[in-house]
Length: 356
Image (cartoon, rainbow, N blue to C red; front, side):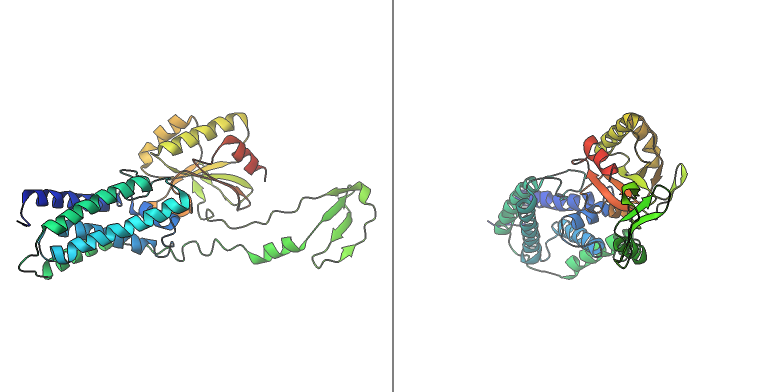
């Protein structure tokens, strides 16, 4: 006989409930900013709407997880809604596998339990089987009161949006990402300049394109064109442990490290080893995490560099399209001439970038 209260049904309901609640919690640890970043990297949304969408997904998971332990509208709404949500996840995971293969952490369980898209698909398929069994074996409650599910939803919504207030990223860094037009235009219009050893101009193509006659180009020395100065996304970060600096001045290496990330520690160690044999441009680290762990980080790396710590939201926006830290950026006058993750970083690529 079908019965909502049979032990096996309740055991399965507890399993599904725990799965959804744990999934919601994992997206908040160590920071919800990591989940927001993943939504952007996977091109589900942009940085403008990622904070809202991330919280809505977490609210839905909390709601379904808790609502699975009550009977009101259970078979009529809760189970079908749970099935639809999992099917949506499956479609997204399949699309990610089609585009990028079975690589990286899909983010289903945050960073607590990293899972590839294929592993997440298997998990979801098993859960869908459990849900189908629960749906078939359950009978609708005789009395359904909508106020109970609505109350659960309201509490989940208020708690998440109040405790983890979203910060809109639409206009963040909008100004600093726009290069100063007058400088760019001036550099683009100037073509070639030759200067005599004596200091007089031997040949010049003027900004209007008019050629001036050269007296003697044999003794002329080519002058390298000036690299246009751009204002990079790192420009606001001027205060480091060593003092004040301008990351957009000259060649710079900026490293984005999570202070307790193994990949970040290994990358920092490699940069230290490179720096011992090859003179690198100034290296600055933008850290995220517990500042008390920096000493252990540098001890493992084998050297120290100027550093600063930023909050999670700013850190993950600086990661841009990098799926996770570390990110190593080589700048020349604010222009990105090298951009690496732990998978693409190596000595040869770094040295090639700093020549640009």
